Amino acid sequence: MADGDVAPASTAAAPACGPGACCVGVAVAVPDPWAAQLRAARASYGDPQADHVPPHVTLVPPTCIDAASLNDVETLIREACRIRGAFTMHLRGTATFRPVSPVVHIQVVRGVSDCEQLERALLAGPLAQELFFPYHPHVTVAQGVPDAELDRAFADLARFEAVFPVRDICLFTQQPDGTWFVASRIALGE
Image 1 (cartoon, rainbow, N blue to C red):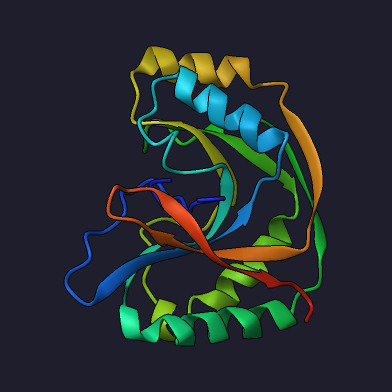
Image 2: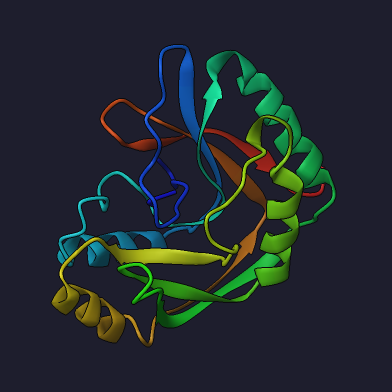
């Protein structure tokens, strides 16, 4: 999801949903203290999404669904979570999607296959969709800002590192002001 506890992120902006629809995403939330550090860094680069999209690793990008199917989405997420137990996520260093997309991100160096398995299981039913880019788990830290700020983000966070357990994933909904909020947290392996 262009990138509230955590928001879904991709390199595209969240789609505009019509009447009776809502925008949802599924992600792994980055916990504090790292989330606060990454959010402050993102804001310092002038990224307009810093206050609306908490640090996260997207599993399903922003997706418009019929608001009446929200329970079906939660059921799908619960089913996907049953196949995958808790795992460790290790974030380290920066990378970029330039020149294809003006994004600097933190790399996922452990937990990639876990995220890939969840992503495959989640892109079904009401969340089924064709993606524009191959899935690449990451944490966006600068997007849609001038090149100089992308360069600064790349350098500033090159030594960033975080290791934490992932025990649940989050279903996010986007509010009218563009802020993402956790609609539910679903435990892995249950």
